[in-house]
Length: 357
Image 1 (cartoon, one colour):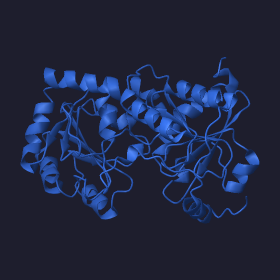
Image 2 (cartoon, helix red, strand yellow; image 1 turned 180 degrees about the horizontal axis):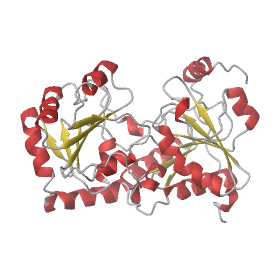
Image 3 (spheres, helix red, strand yellow; image 1 turned 135 degrees about the vertical axis):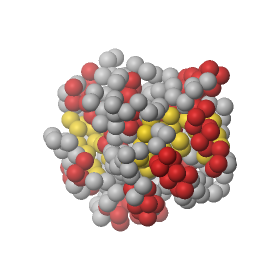
């Protein structure tokens, strides 16, 4: 059966709670609309900015409106989604598995919270663990599709605002996670300040949206002809514009690697051979210079890693996600009931002010 053709006249809800989710789901929206499906957006909470909606994108403002619209499929990049809304719930992830461990030593990327009917995984190194979890729990399915976010990534973005053809210097992109325990931002501030003053590289800085505001302001104050602080809901042009990345344990570094470009990390939690990991702040500059030489041995290890992380470079991951969603919707396989999660559902109902059953 042609599961893509089944898109026509079906309803798909994009459920988001962070600004970066727009870019994650828009390639999928494009596929749905091109095949005759309907799309609506639900923006949960104060961390998502309505001003980032594009012209023509339609929203549902309340959970009651969601129930009235009756979506067939709900897509969410977040870890949690209300189970009391209609439609099959599809997890598409808000990033790659960067090896982050919580305080219990557990990898949150593989934590099953009982919200989703289908996980669309990005590549072999996440598919196998999720399939094992699906066998264990029995209330969701897993399909390896690639990540829809990256569909535009495998062609050059026209009129990239972060490129400067008149500047011959190499471009360094600095990204950081928000966790105080893992973030390079406070630990390398003085070193990055020095880089911005010496002018050796053209520097772009972009942080996770949950980064503390005082740190964001500190880095904004560093802006000059050598350093630009970027706030955006779409990091893909930013990633394409840089030659090398300096990062910590943020999953954005994995997106950068998929371009077959080197990454220098500072105190990474899972420093594999595909990274140049540094623990001494005074060694960071030397590591960046080394990365810019693109050494053959390192690039070979990056290629091997990318084949396990996200082997798809055809720009068709959205099609695979859509087909997998429709297949689950139409075949309606027998799955075990999801756990009820009374406390979480109560909190979500309170947050969304929805009490109907």
